[in-house]
Amino acid sequence: MLARALRGVRQQLGTQALSVATVALALFCMAGALLLLENTGAMVQRWGSPVRVTVFLAEGASGEQVESLRSILAALPEVEEARYISSAEARATLGAGGDQTVTSAPIDLFPATIELKLVPSATNAERVSSVSDRIRRLPMVADVETYRGFTEKLKGLLVGGKAAAGIVAFAVLLCVLAVVSNTIRMSLSARMREIEVLRLVGATPGYVRAPFLLEGAMLGAMGALVAIIVLAAVFFTLRGQFEMSLGTALGIHPVFLSWAVLFALVAGGGALGATGSAVALRRGLQG
Picture 1 (spheres, rainbow, N blue to C red):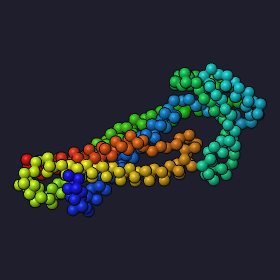
Picture 2 (tube, rainbow, N blue to C red):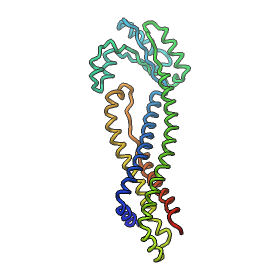
Picture 3 (cartoon, rainbow, N blue to C red):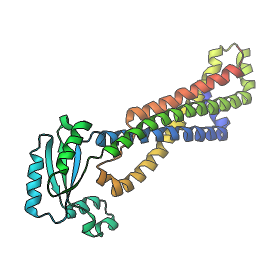
Picture 4 (cartoon, one colour):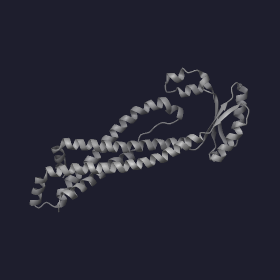
């Protein structure tokens, strides 16, 4: 059965290759959407709960005043940790990826701050708002950033991304079914004489159909593999550039799709290919 399926692929190698490329393009779009969702979800998890609060210091604060303020903030019941970040340290952190524009920028562009890590029980919106209001009234505090607006935008982006991923998945489903179905239909037409001979010698419908189902499954699975390889090449090329520019500053390290998702993509591609083949066989064969 496998030999017959492979022979069918070799007989129409150009058409099969074009079909694999088309399926790969469709599955690349879906896999890319999944990859974007996975990393956006990690970003929302990292920034979604306001566990961090940044306190910007007023200009001219002395070392003693800064340490006194840090001690006061660390003593708040909502605060787990308070850490002073100097202007030089802020510039070094942002320029850790080797960005010469950042490392050569004037140090005055990077305000000194005190970074607060909140206790888990104080990360709801009401507690964070209450803490920030109290901190703003302290001397030597210029401003307080809770990142609430940023996190709300991220959550909205994730919800919209899930809806878009659903639409992409449905479009990919239709595309793969159509491509594989048309390819198998052409393969049926080219091998109709062989099929008639098999029927004449008493071959069962299952024996006739099996190689075409396997051929469709191989088309779908190979398309998924090509999509994964191309996506991996693009991802690992861009990840280094992202980490050098924004990853270190945001504390985010993009990850590739898990092995379970990759396996599901290949298996799903094969299943879609077999389904498209079954549709073609139902229309192209009788009995």
